[in-house]
Length: 86
Image (cartoon, rainbow, N blue to C red; front, side, top):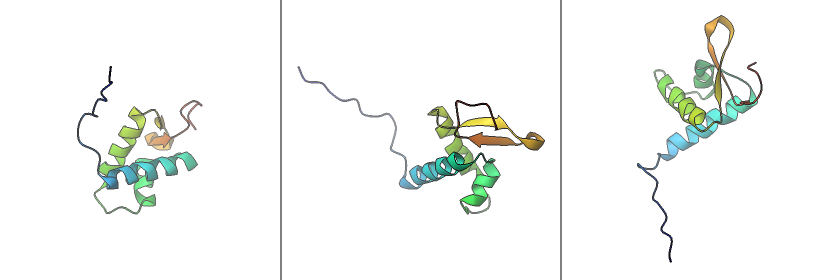
């Protein structure tokens, strides 16, 4: 009996998206950051903050990052998913 592999659903993500997700994860592993801090650290064009947020959402759905409430009600993202929020 031969096994057939299921094809993943949907289309593959563009390489630019994969690289941005990896860069966001790398930065958040170094230290907790807000979305805007990540946007500045990645030196992205103005008005593209949503791309960082989408990367964070994908990483959160994979269990690699989580949201924490930081100072002045800003959301801080961290890769330390097992410890209390910083």
